[in-house]
Image (cartoon, rainbow, N blue to C red; front, side):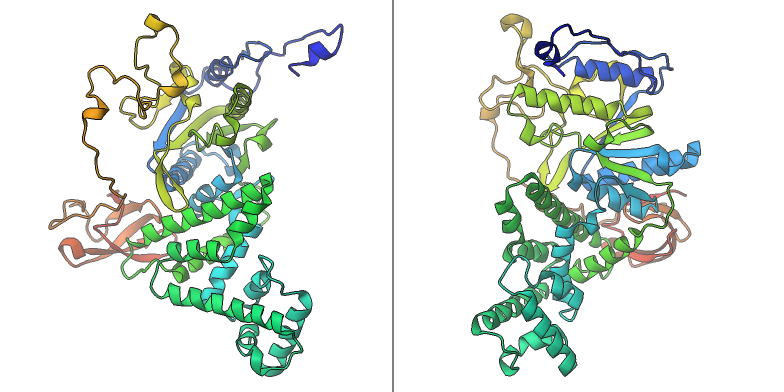
Length: 507
């Protein structure tokens, strides 16, 4: 489109500048964003609609909390404004981001539909990893075994599998038991194939041994590497292969978040068995009931041409949006900015932009940096829902009027450039002692129970970040060992360790 006038003669230009969809705040904010692009056919979009609400920006501690914020916000709008599920859309830059949103919506019993793809736990690569984990818990799971016995390819063909199935039926044993005794059964299988079957059995048994002493995340990470699944997609090198690796990474992130959450529950171990039970409940909810009133989940690319009253754009962080693979040239960055413009203008009444302080990558919490696109929105059109302590906005290290324009893309207030002059009024970083890195962990009161709300009592109504609303039916223990048995609205009864539990007393 940008080169159209160069490619053809006698071209006429007609600017379609009226927006009939969005509020004036959304339109003006979008104009302030796209105005940063140098390579564009300029136009000023306007609307006759009302001003509407400011664009809401929300910061969450982690991606799991981001999902819970989105789910809670949708639930509250539905209750307060009598909205239907189909009036909400959640947009993300990459498919792998859907996992935390899906998990949070399920826990709120909010139905959703993935557009242009499958629900997270229905994706092939996720089913492959979960099949290996199911084999660890139950080697007689023949559906899982048939799925993974030759993935990644290890030279075990369909004919061999058919012979194993026939033998299993004949001896009334599982296929895995036949494989364990492959030397004792004459199946007319050559020695090379027998060795591959024995290697597979040995690998699964080694996972079972590891499962006895480790949590779900450590085991899953080991399985993903040891089986060669990650290497398989890494060798692929295509965008599809990269997407599958990102999905497996997100699965591991979800397992890590699950393990951390299980620390709250009395008697829970965070092992792979508990995680698979949780997943089984999740996949049961994936079944389409025929109800069309669902929240829409999709990538921003798929959202082009669509519109929704309420839109949540999640993952507004550097290396995520804009994508880390689209920042090497100005033209690539400008294309990302156009994509953000598209996302924002899908909203008719209200737009939410969310980002996290930390995001799990391969099961480890890393610092996340707010997207530069947040800074580019004219501040008169936005409202911060969370205190930003100086903000996500750029802060020049020196007065730009002295030496001309400062390269703002390198001068983040939160992460100053190495070797840059210190900010006036702050000590030089070279004069500071290097602090020891401390791994993030759940706060645990020592010797007292100040972290436990003194208003908590039997009969109290509470809200939990993972399990939702509930009622305290029993309290027991004292000090750091105090526990609460809670009946949640969904019918589940959980006994939580109060020194870990993230409970809000409602009344």
